[in-house]
Length: 170
Image 1: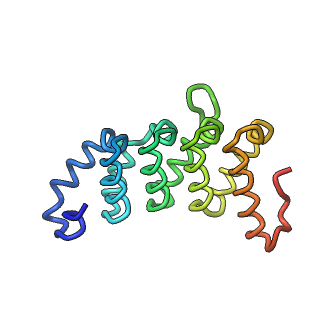
Image 2 (image 1 turned 90 degrees about the vertical axis):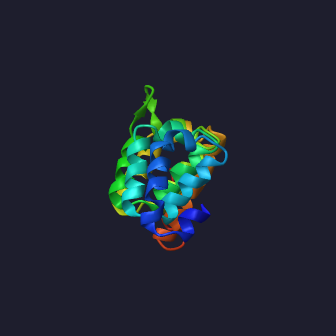
């Protein structure tokens, strides 16, 4: 991480290439995930895009992993709107025959990814995620972590509508 911080981009390009190539292994490692997070936070936009390309299609699975879920949160936080939309497509889609968002909200780590997505997505993207969650409201209320997400949405809506006048979660 220190090399990435203190050296010129041209000097670290080969290291970045290796990090991108090894992303799938690094995100699941207790120390390697920090290296990928660092690249996402401090790297060039094309570095972020290269990492997303490596983990595309694995967002839901990674969200359920102790270390990889932190990388997914960073990717949401430091990505472009276009990248976030690609991630949202996975989050609001199907995963192993089930609604992905439901799988994530049931999970100890995945629920934090959903909360991060609610925080960083704006406008129609956030609305799409909330609609996907609301579709499964009865089930969500039964999950320990689902309750956190409902509270999170209510807090966002209270702020959006000025002091709790939003419609609530039904």
